Amino acid sequence: MKAIAVILGRGGSKGVPGKNTAPIAGKPCVQWTIEAAKSAQHVAHVIVSSDDPSMLAFARAADAIAITRPSALANDTARVDDAARQAIVEFEKTHAEVPAHSPIVILYANVPIRPPDLIDRAVHLLRNSECDSVQSYAAVGKYHPWWTAKLDDTGKVSPWEGDVLNHGVFRRQDLPAAYVPDGGIIALTRRALFCEIPGVPSGPHAFFGLDRRGVINPEGAVIDIDAPTDLLVADAILKERYAHR
Image (cartoon, rainbow, N blue to C red; front, side, top):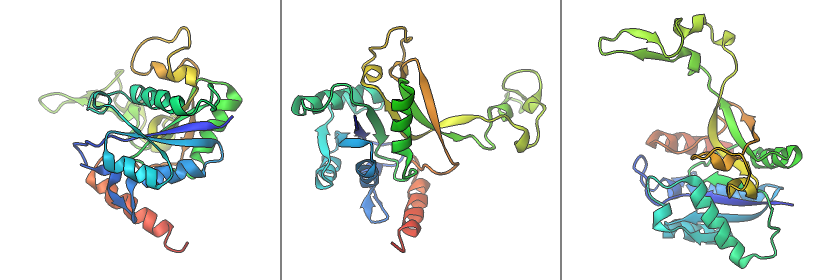
């Protein structure tokens, strides 16, 4: 049973206006994610959900399913899971032949760079482990929680937690492994997305279910566009990557 990929991207953005359709290495940003989803072996259908007409037009041109997102789900406080559920419900109205329990992949339109095997790795783990969700992570590197500190109004430094600054560790090699979500992918079951799993505490992350797992990406393997400099970095990387193809 192959997955349904839902690509989410709002028209509005305060940090980088129009980032989801901004040109990167000759293509609108969202197109890189569409192509990644369409090339994944474990994806059967690719949906683009947006309130932006130009982004939906790019989706149709790339042979993806364009679904208009209501304005109530496209503001600064809108939640990812609400937008994804709306897209799936609209998709199912015209695709009754698709198995009801197909895995679902959530991808962000502002991520033009992710490992080429990431989608398949995440769906493979989701299916084989029978877990509720799989999210991609990257190592925190030198920004480790053990090296987090507090500064008061006088500039005095104290540990963020505990009594010993830096947990007594001063070499990066001695830090225990720690990871943060990198925005590359969320793969999950339909039951998890629609909050149908008993015993899951309520809250903004309830749609991840109970059995949550992760796949690890190399540091810097995922680039999401959150600042103007990210556009420059992604553009340079993709131009170099495809220069000789």
